[in-house]
Image (cartoon, rainbow, N blue to C red; front, side, top):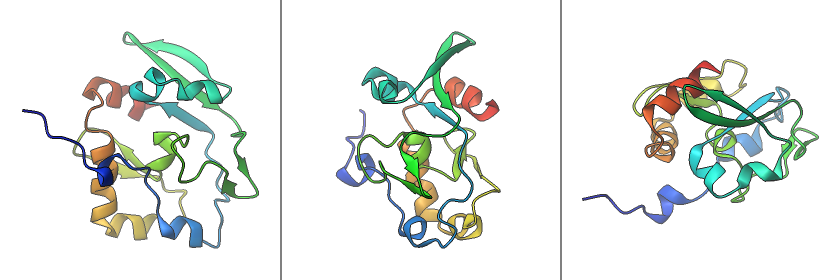
Length: 139
């Protein structure tokens, strides 16, 4: 029997530390990968995406400056159009249970100590096949 998703699990992840950070994302992420469920609903089409095939997976992504990231702020922050890769930043899942945090994030240690936030990020990718996560982790 599959567990039903709750509103808290399916809502767009927001994190108050991000909006309060004085660095205002000086580190501009240069690669965003779209997860399979986002490709299914066509989210990638809002971005200048490219596609590569790795181990049978068509990986949709964009690289370079995001058209929605200006002046240190994401114009899609908190909306259903914000890619999951961005929602879970600085968390990078390596499997359904393991992860690492981007060293470029100024708030890395605060995210690391917030186990609840990391758990929510990992719940967001629980339906993503492990072999996709393996490819995602290697990009």
